[in-house]
Length: 481
Image 1 (cartoon, rainbow, N blue to C red):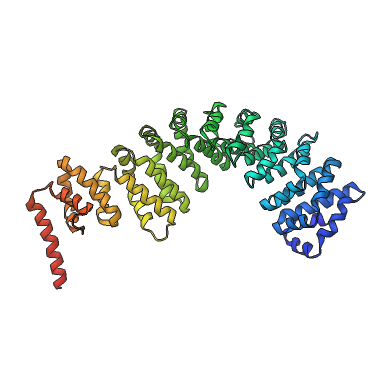
Image 2: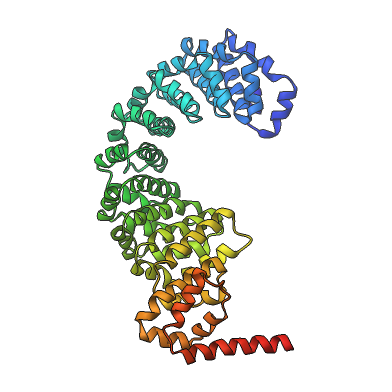
């Protein structure tokens, strides 16, 4: 009855107040196996609910009894006991450490060799929940000998067992290069790579996650993942009907792309940039985030790779993300990626500027509602694009809207382009740009004043004087009024 009641959240507080923990503990030693199993199941459901109840299991000295019985009892009890350990260990590193301290790891690892797939699954799940908290706990799981057996589990025919084993390997790998190397050394990559095209979406999620956690740490580990011939196979996952498969595939490609130009070039050569761009266009929200960052990493490496990103029509897609996405952290990633694309040459900057992205970046930078990170990334993106941009139609609106710290970069670009472009000089006069430059207040001897002087020197003195006097007259009439 308690096990049944514990399935409903509204009953938990009542059970806790009734002192149910102390009532269940002796039932773990009952002579009737079914009572033992049901008592363990009830404890697991209670501990799973929140950290306080999980702590009550630890303080009630229940763990040693569970660990002892885990080695001795039948498969039904083993599954229930492993469930309790998982439910306790998931809440915090301290509770997971309590499980390690009571000697549970060795017993759980033995359960990975059990003939029953359900027992293996329950043990793998518990080990993964312990390992996910930090490197020390993950190392304890490794030292207990879990990794080779988890790799054997992903080769078993049962899909559920494959999923949980892949998830546990992901949790072990994520903390450090050394832990990831431990997983690699027992041949995990080849087996994981073979499951990328498995029809089960939940398994694909875990497989892609595990490969990502391995690849993220170093160039060597990323190269090992690539050598398992995951390209172009992994690109098919970007079109999967499951959003989390898409996200994890994008994350894997991102973790590989970030390391070196050579790895990014390999991704470009297999059509990875175009595939990620299409993926960003087909989803919303956080699912887009790793793909956005991947494009930024590729573009950051070199001019040629940034041009490959432009050719793949990624810039308009990133501009859409910048304008459409409600979350600031996604906008910030898009701003950063656009900055990485536009910072290389005038051609790169123009490709970003023609999408009307610069005014959006400026409004995000100046908005008081933007997060600090979004403001910082927007500002950096604007500066890095402006310093290369020679496409004057995109720059001119900034003469009217930009704050002083951005304005100096805009005027600086005009001072570089106008001396060498007669058509641009004429347009600058007729559009009112030259007049606007005369209105800018710049300190004597400042860099901004030097830029203004350079622009003025492109025109006959009488034209500049006329605009300057016009500005003065407006100012005088305003003061007298």
